[in-house]
Image 1 (cartoon, rainbow, N blue to C red):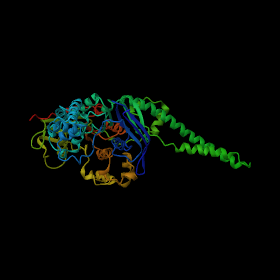
Image 2: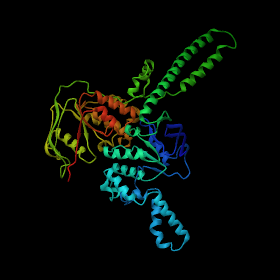
Image 3: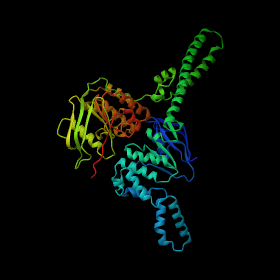
Length: 550
């Protein structure tokens, strides 16, 4: 066994995250960890890495195992260039490279040093490090980061550093790699490169992800739920089938317990009536009442499980189980949909649009979006998709011509209500509390909002109205910020929405809820996604943005 994980108990503050959570990883096994936002996936990752040791239990790696993990912080990298950072953090590279470079000048006829030098040369070759710098630079090109190879790590954005971490892991020749949400913010070319590496790599990988394309490539899926771990052999398709079967069994068991509680309560009332009406001493009904009370206490101590089944599998449930699932299923985000049908109109017209700053980013684009249209915008990161969205937003707003519009026109219908879902939340919200941010969102659309409406909105989007309302937006998790973005997206009942990677940071039930809402949404949609499942679900016209060749 490569690693054995046995977490007896882990809490943060008053919240217990894990209890008797067990997991083991074997050589070359590729495991995905999934679970609802907030169940503790990132905490578990930090425990596996060794950054969090405040728990009861153990994480034991096989002696000598080489473990690498994507880092979240880079405060200690100094002025290292990207290539230097990757190379110096490959297992054994720095030590072996130092021996190979320095020993020839000092070892002379020293047998010990000659032996160390010879072994270093052999080990360097075994690890395939002689050409590793070229391969690292090639990987940087594949992730569209070739231009950063000789820049300092401190000059990179947070997203760029995430890609550098993946490249470091890919070239580490580790026994096990621990990777957190690797495909968030990847474009389709970078994602294809990562999936190719993932499928071909010969070491074990534990990855936290809800990317269904990546889940389709794993050997096993571990679902963190109700403080424990549940293991499903196979990929995403196999997981859906097994999860539906197991959840149906759980529902049957849960319903059986609930019926037993009702029956025990009835028996207690009956026994108490008989106890009160008898004059025998000792009263023969007291022991029976005590046994029933003890059984009731044990039954009521059983925590209510979390239930989630994908919509396609729900259709195959029996009537009784389907009814039980509808009543007991895990809560998902509730999105208010555009209910009213609108007449067909040209909501947005782009005529020979050319966008950029100093120079155009792509060739002239013409596009007509009508009520109900779906347009899938495809293009590499940096090609100008975000600039195009900004140009559209500025172009339909009242005021001067957008500074990013170099040529052509952007015309919005007089009845257009446009809103966007962006990858990064507006910095203006970060120092607000969650409640203040929601109030500000609605007021920015000149919509009235009451404290009761704020609390209801929090609940609809899976926040705890009382516990979460005063949390600073800047302190929210990625999944919580994504849900705040969804609140903003639908606040003004838009008839045209622009989506930029909306499934990033969302868990599987919330992704499915979003897909269901978008499928019923009657307005038009311009969307960017590299989630093939979402693209297939939404459909529509593909529009590829091709950069100009300089």
